[in-house]
Amino acid sequence: MTIKPNIMELIQAGKQGEAIALLRQPIAMKAAVGPRSAKAALHAAEVLLGGDVEGTARWMNARSLYLHMTPLERAEQSEEGLQTVIEMIDRIGHGVFL
Image (cartoon, rainbow, N blue to C red; front, side, top):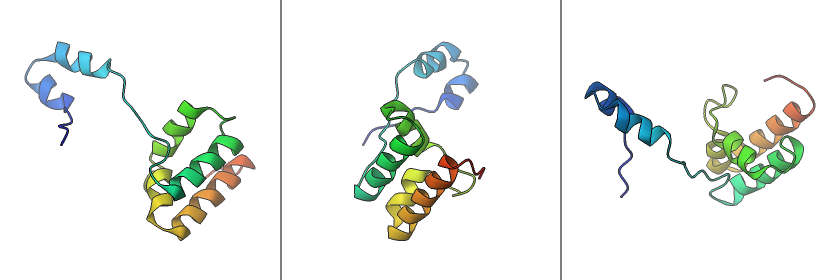
């Protein structure tokens, strides 16, 4: 199991230099973790992000106020969740603010 560092603990311990070093490290992010999120990510890449892989990963992992979770999480929950994400992508693609 990987231990995820918490920079608050470092800041409170007066270790701002270590906290800054952690913030400068790259973070690996997946745009999809299963078949449903992969379908949603492909649709988002095509409709919203011009095929940008990094942008798609960021979008799929950004918490949505509309969904109350990330698109990746919602898509993986169920087929209904996937459909909700696909519909959200289409609405955004057509200029509907959510």
